[in-house]
Amino acid sequence: MKRVIFLCLFVLMAHGGMDDSASTLRAEELDAQVNLNLSALTTQDRIAFDAFKHDLESYINSYEWTTNFSGERIRCSFQFNIVSSNGGDYTAQLFVTSSRPLYKSDQVTTMARFFDAGCEFSYYRGQELQHGNGYRSLESVVDFYVYTILGLDFDSYKLQSGTPYFQQAQQVAIIASAQKGNGWAPNVTSIGTYTRLGYIEDAMNANNRAFRDLIFAYHYNGLDLLSTKPDQARVTIGTVIDSLVSLRRISSDAGRSVFLRAFFEAKNQELADLARLFPDNLTAYFQKLGFLDPVHQNYYEEAQAKLSH
Image (cartoon, rainbow, N blue to C red; front, side, top):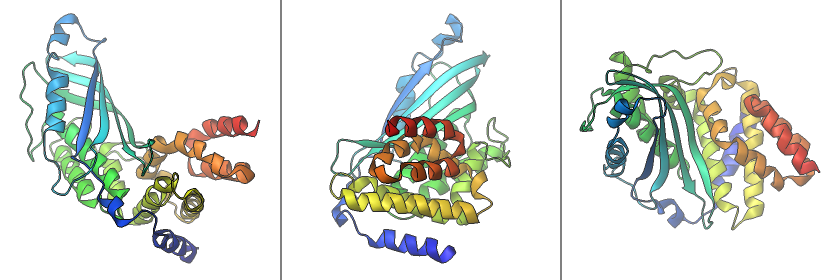
């Protein structure tokens, strides 16, 4: 079985696809939007956040996070739903998303979609946000997700090229966990429940390298070719799904993988839409998705029912 998987990977990487210039079509880092929901706070508490959106967008968009970035800025969003306050200490639900354009297309694909229910930080009106290597309750959370977004984006253009940014995110998480920062506990569970530290350690786990290689193929030799080489794109996407199924069957850890679960959290709607590429094999296609991503089984069943009518 392992030989089959590695053969699939070799074929996927050997397909070629876009010309070499496409891999350099990158852009000046991040185009982040920050949004706030303060409805749970008192009028007095809301005053503290007068400049929060502006300052945090500037913190993200004006900083040089990489040394080798070119192309379109990565579009991303940080939605803070502040749910409670205690003298300048806040608890929030944080939604983080990012996307990237597809090659020679006006379409985009979602790369990151995180729901962080345990975001806790201190903040006061007029606080100056600072970059650095030490633990800072707000900035460390943002740094972690920025580096994760960069890692996912780079990984989709070149094999394993997101590793330096995943390493940066891991370093942020390790430092924050060592300082016992709120929301940074290494409480990875047996069922793959999301935690920041659990996610990034899973992303960096050598056992998951094959997953990352397949995800690269899915984007670079699959989605990116839909508008120019649709037949090749279809073959690649189908092979990626089959290879993921094979890996899932032989790996006892795959079902608990936080990294893989986060991939399907970002991609489940897109994967359901791609069923149009396999009109003669709808049932088998959706069975594979349900096996890989049982969390969204009901969604896949509904999508299949719509396409079958």
